[in-house]
Length: 333
Image 1 (spheres, one colour):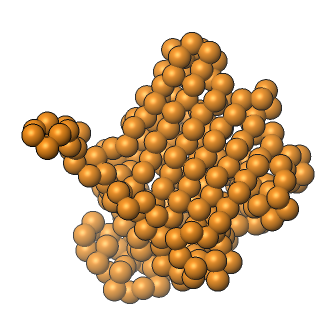
Image 2: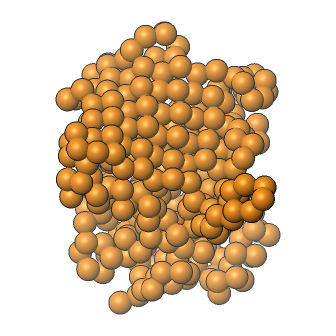
């Protein structure tokens, strides 16, 4: 069985998902929609897809599922439209920047019994999946502490910063999801600090570019998150989990995993310089998981509820920064 996809959005993340659909057996890109005619035409030509209006896609009989990769402020309304149209939905995070709006949207998904998956792609990275599998197998005993490092090579454009929802909702939210995913427990309280160290324009836009967060789970396990919008050495993505019987770590990935030793010392190739290259396979893996859920009944492991949980942590982190205190998750409705 082949799942016939439509793609909403032909921008940066839309291109990533177009490539992911093309890479997955049992998936085919049939149609796409984007108000940017040139971007839509280029992506449609690349994958042999039709260009259609969003409403036409909702009414199309040759579409089984949609990937929502449009701007964030369109996600919720498009999810509701396609849920009522009977299409399975894969949505890039976040559903919305408002918890209230997210919950209203997910109520429609539940009411219509729509298969729905949220795009937390790091759960589907091969190294991180292997790390999770070793934790579940008891290799390091009970997880007690974790350190998550996520630093971008350079900040996004200021125009994006202004609509992103801020560093906690846009960037750190991936780490919040990974904290829950790896530790296997809900977060109970959050202590966060943030600053503007990279570009004053980011501060003028009302955001931060550097953040440190300490999360505590319901049983007292600890997770430390380190974020920066600038890493001169490349896209820095590392995880370490310490447990009662040992430690497990996932190191940075490089285009070639080699090391050269000569008279100058030991050298390795530079890190990937963008999330689109670092997580190419992870994006394909999550689309493959979505296809498996639709064709084989495999469980969906990145859900709307996961999105709500991560967004609540992000809200708590922002409140912690604003008020200079530890915030209990129970304070975030």
